[in-house]
Structures are given as structure tokens and as C-alpha cells.
Image (cartoon, rainbow, N blue to C red):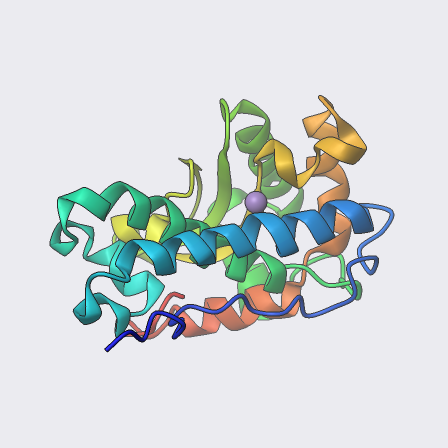
Length: 218
Ligand code: MN3
């Protein structure tokens, strides 16, 4: 039976208008980023797993966490495109036009404890993003070891720190496609402006969920 029109993975809608994050992220960048880049990762992921019905039942994060179980011929495609899908799905939700500007509650306490202060955390996060060579992501994540402390990580391509036992709390896309139309080579300006659109309520919810060792990190 030919059932190839059934698509398992679906592009989630942007949770706000593409112009909602202006002036920090422009509408054209948001539209291309979501409607073209993210859409293509979803499309290519579905295509890669199409010959393997047993994989079509799996979530994108399951595919990343079990990459050694993926047939070798599609493993790279699954790693890159499931990673692109998971990371971008988190990224849209990590931002909001109604940013509170800083964390509150237990997440704020944990950031102060693990980085010294919120300002020091921001400086280190920006530095990680500026230092990342080529395309990748910068993360605030919670380690599953080291007293479950918060750490700043960078990953290349669409790698996700959940595969190394870290629960993502907050992430920034440092691929050029995330900022080049507006900022060109001025990546530090993009990183700086991005703080104005961080959804700290979402980060706080993820921090709470990270308390549960069995929580799905997707
Ligand atoms: Mn991107």
C-alpha cells in the first residue's frame, strides 16, 4: 500500500506573528527561518525515515537519543534533520514579544548560584555564541551530573545537548540564517539584541520540568 502522503513530523506554527520580535529579529528573517529552513528539516526528516515504518512511530528526540539504532544509510540525515526540527521547535518557544527581561524565582536563584549573577551569565552566554565557529547553537542546560548544576554549552550543526545528558533550558540559534539579513557579520549585535525577546516564563517552566529525571526534554 502506498501511504507516502502520511507525514509523521509536522512543522509547528510560530507562536506569535513573524514581525512580533522586531526590531531585534526582523519579520523577513523569521518568515524564511520558520517557513523555509525549519520546514525543510521536517520535510527531509520525514523523507529519511519513510522507508522505515518502525521509525515513523518515534519522536524526533527519540531518534536523536537512539541514533546508533538508525540504519547507517540515513543516520546522518536523521541526526541533522531531527536535530534541526527539535532545536527550532524549542527555539520559537524560547522567545516572546512579551519578554520580562530577566529570570525570576528558582531559575533566577540557580543562575545566580551557578554563574555568580545574571549579568555574568549573560556575558558568558554571549561569549560562547560569539566564539562558536561556523553554524551551531548556544545553550543554557542543566547537567544530569555535577550536582545538577546549570551550564553553558555550544553545539555544532544541529547537535542537541540532551544526547550528552543535559536538559535544555534556553537556546539561541547562532547559524547565520538566524541573523544575517539584518545583522550581516555583526553576530555579537544579534546576540545582544536577542536578550530582549527571551521568554523567561518558558525557561522557568523548562527548569521546573528538569527536576523530573524522566521528563521529556523535547
Ligand atoms: Mn536556524
